[in-house]
Each structure stands twice: as structure tokens, then as C-alpha cells.
Image 1 (cartoon, rainbow, N blue to C red):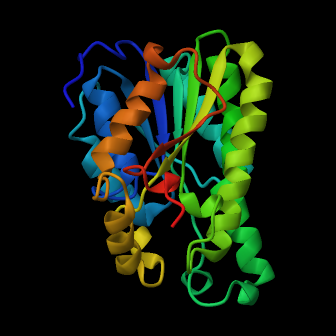
Image 2: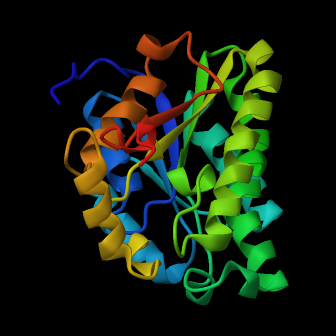
Length: 261
């Protein structure tokens, strides 16, 4: 998609969840930056810092690169304090964070452990609320936007998605509650429910290749989607073109979610 390089001119957007060059979060980052946004990227630990900094070097506008483990409230507070110091304010936030233990993403859902459940919900769902709380004071009155990522497994049963489906259901409900509360501050909150994409993270789901082939065969467009399609949808949601849209779960899955049989 070719977009005006000024669509997000002077907009400042923080992206949480870039892990590598194949991640959906990185595709979103590139789309936002190409439209003129100034970007802040975060990394979770020293292991991912080098990858994120290497990717950031390819972006224009000298992006910020900051540490943030979303399970630690002090790091969330620190990252927004640094963004405030460098940017002054914030116009957008991309939440592209999800995690569940590999052993929880195969076989019986009944085997879900208490610890695995708590970890998946904390990282994949609660983190949206925690980040929104930190970002809201920097966005208030600026027509800000918050965008997160989900999957159909949060609404329908998908084999082996298990506890992550529960986490995505909590995430989608959080979107609606946050949208209702933050609307008075002129902050929109939306979610993209993306079709399966062959990322490193997705490969952690048992038999993920079967999910890809099944979706391509059943979807109305007779194909899977790619990360660029999700990225351009995020660009739309972050721009003035979506100024009247909030609280939505927007499906980008080649139409697969409408199929019953």
C-alpha cells in the first residue's frame, strides 16, 4: 500500500512488542514510520535489545529505543516518563504483546496450569490496561489512539490455542472497557483480530502449519494474510481517517471469521 508520507506527520507513537524482523509489530512500525510518525520502540531484556536497536537503525526520525518489561509496573512508569521527556506527548500506542508457555499451547486445555494461566493473562491482556494507564496522560486531548492485536481464538475455539484464547478474550473485552472510559479524553482504543501469520511467535502453537493451510482453504479470499496488511490497518486506525472509530474488533483475516462451516 502506498500512503502519503505526511499522513502521520508530527505524530509520536510508541510500539510495544517488536521482537524481530518477522514480527507483526515490526511491520506496523515500518508502516507508521513511512507515514511520517516518530517512533519509540521498547525491548524486554538484554537478549532482545540488540535486535530491536538494529531494526530501529533502519527507521527515519531517530526513534527512541527503551527497555520495558510489561510485567513490571516500575518499568512501565519509567518508559512513559522517558517518552514524556523526549517527546513531550504521545499520539499513539501499539500493543503487540502476547505470551504463553509453549506447553500450554498444545493438547488439552484442561491441563492448563494455574501459573501458566496467570502468566498468559498478565502478559497478553493485563499489560494493555497497564500501558493505557501510563499513556493516557500523555495522550489526553490529542485525539490519541491505542491499537492492540488479537486472533479469532479469543472468540471461537481454535485447536491448541488454549489459554491464549482465554487471554485474547480478556484483551478484547479490555478494549471495550478502555474505549468507554478513555473516549472522554479523546483517546480511541481499537483491536485488530489478525488471521494466522507465519511468525516465530505463532510457530509456538502446536500444528500451526495445519491452521495456516485450513484458513487459506476456507477464507473467502482463498488465502492467508501477511503482516503488511495488518500494518496498514494499524496505520488507518492511528490516522485521522479512523477518527470516529473506537471500541472495535476489526478483522483482517481474508474473511475467515464469517465462515460457519
